[in-house]
Length: 299
Image (cartoon, rainbow, N blue to C red; front, side, top):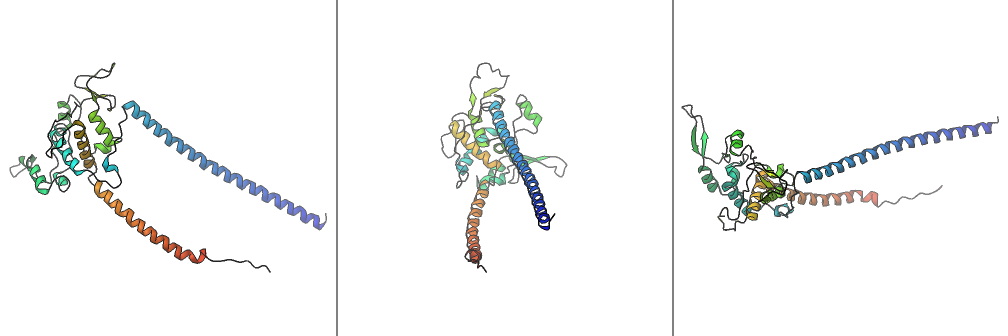
């Protein structure tokens, strides 16, 4: 074999090996890419199935609550403090007979619902069991700002005994603990039917509510028109009562709601200003590279 033929054969062999290596690498890359695509499709399918399953369970557990345009959900709006004060009146005169709010103290009401003097007077209107004293016995004293809102029952067993076995939940986090919290609680308060649908049998002490899972609820309808009289003269319709107490419970679940939104607006404003400065600095530093001209001169 001549030298020229031997060199040509080696070149063709090297080219074939390079093509085979390139084909193998491309196959590995394609397989790796297909694996990531399959993983992405699997994750998307699982997420979609979870959402559909959640909607299906919600539909079976109870009627989906109607969504309402709550003012505090807007970007630049805070909680309605007048509504919160009225909602506290509803809770104190209606809901507090069965439900507790054990995560709110009287001091939390200062500056949001009442002045310090009003909150202190409200706390002192309740007698609190304290002690033991110097004689080793418990005693009662007027409430202080550091005391928490009183519970209607001393323990869960007493609460169940007084409510035919049903346990009234604590309302501190109720709007956060339920899916679509504000809308669910609002619709639940207004969702009672005087007579259950045909084929639905209720046990003694139960009532039918279209928004409660299963329909049978142990809580009697709590709200009626003019059940209380607002101190500010607002007409106490049933829907107004429900709206006010839900706003108050939203604040109980998130006392920092207004502060967090105010801090968020400050952060967005500051970051926007910083972003404009950063973009200008980037354009200034990169201007040399972006405006350079490269020329190739052949020899």
